[in-house]
Image 1 (tube, helix red, strand yellow):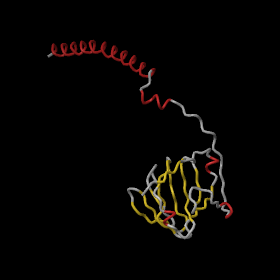
Image 2: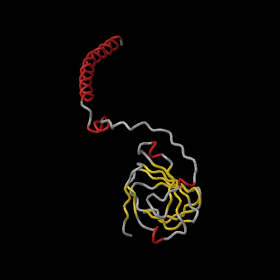
Image 3: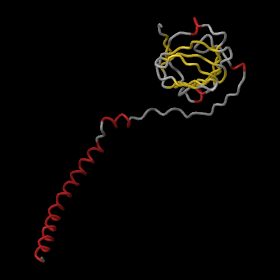
Image 4: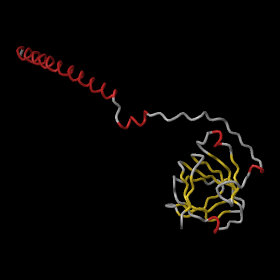
Length: 183
């Protein structure tokens, strides 16, 4: 029995001796490969390492309700817009405004299929109601307290609205293109 114990420990020592050299060689090789990988970033990380120009520092925007701030100078002729100062404060990163759709609704003027070339758009109904159509969603009645997002370039249109409707709209970026489509 003693012989078996000796031979077993001798064989274990031999295995340790043989395996001891190989891991050292492998770790050195691994270190070389890892160092090379760090020196030459993968294609996917090259894009992330390119720095975008720094955006100017945003400032505080405070907007208090004043009737005279509603202007008919926005995207739609049947709406008045109250700019909340977000575009100027964020240097074009986003815009936010309160929209009053002017009643009564005229579907010939209002119901035009279109999309906006935006990164983000969210609408919240402050007052009244609005009936919309969105591609893939169909017709939806949005009432006071309803909110929705519109994915970039989704085809949509307003179908009808109450005479007192007010909407809060947030869009990124502040400047964007609107494309009217043939229904």
